[in-house]
Length: 262
Length: 235
Image 1 (cartoon, rainbow over the protein chains, first blue to last red):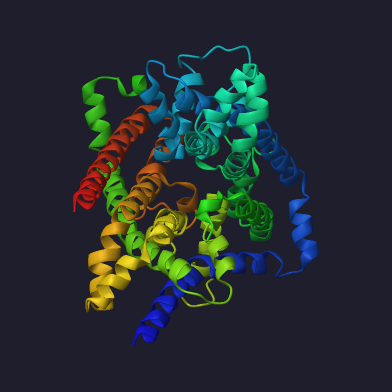
Image 2 (image 1 turned 90 degrees about the vertical axis):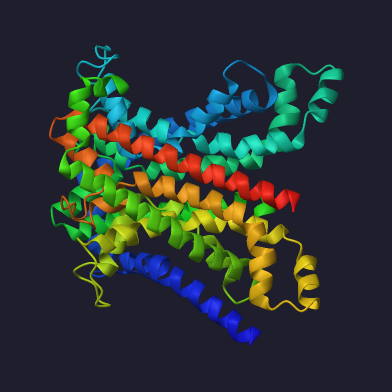
């Protein structure tokens, strides 16, 4: 009886994952390579596809380091310091997780667009790369902070105080004591940030104006190809993104905080 | 972004009482609530088999659970459209129907409950369950009286995250739902449509409503969570 129930649960759980997760993803790979690897390769090496990949890489290359540094500084400020409005900061950091990406895009559009508060900067923000970078930074903001904060709380301040009594300066303490303790959390946060930065669609879709060959990132390229009935192109670009996702997954498994691993 | 909604209270009211906007908001709310509930049940079951069961390939499955976090949402949408769309080879076509909304939202919110319940289940002391069994409790009774109350705060945290995600989801929905007004158009797609047609003011107004709904729901789930946690601590 117990065994029967165990198999039943296993069957229900695994079928759910299979139907919802494994089968669709496997099929996309199959579809992309259905007519041979050559055709898929041609589809991702068209000039617009290559440009889209470049845009995505530029965005990630700016957003990920920016959020890593911000994330570490912000986590230290939240855990180690007291300042007015600290609770507010704590809430605001989580805000991007609760906001629809479309709303984030709209906010940037209204802020930097024609007639917005920050309209009239010397360079274009909306419908240009800077806006896409800003939107991506915004949506991927919480990940490093959220991973580092609990670790900082848990390690406590004893070692940092010991370092200080031994004459270490602030930077030295951070470099020698604090950072080594939080580095895996930082790494995990960076992986999550990267995944989000590469895959962002909604916010970027709104602020970019989707100018093909100019402000089209790889995710926007997938949609544009699909809407133009170029399914091979859409699937091939999707597979490229899916492979990046799987690489992310492997990195996540490696860096996952140890207490979550079984 | 609030200043765009400040085009007078009448404009605001007109924008949010537009029948198409109301239909989109309603669909979003109902679908997200449904998704949150299904996640609560299925997420707990998957977390359970990942922690308490042993079977070959378990660690691969465990890693795969994070895939919806890693996979770009537009790819997720395309993925589901391939298997459950018009070109489906398994004979299931949910594209351009409300089922499509549900399926895509279930996909993108899959990891939340699993990942919040899993660590709690791991830490859970099995002695309590053994004690209950030795006192003659059946396995369903043990689950209901011992395991479930301990998992409930984690389930609710996961549900809150899943709900917030579902209510704002955009990328996974644009391809598969067909964005039919009054049928499959969710709030974020409606907002996007308003922006595209050069009407950012009503886009902002509907965004404000969506945000208020999200925060109210998160607040309610948070309050419920605090309640069950406190109850648990005093019992």
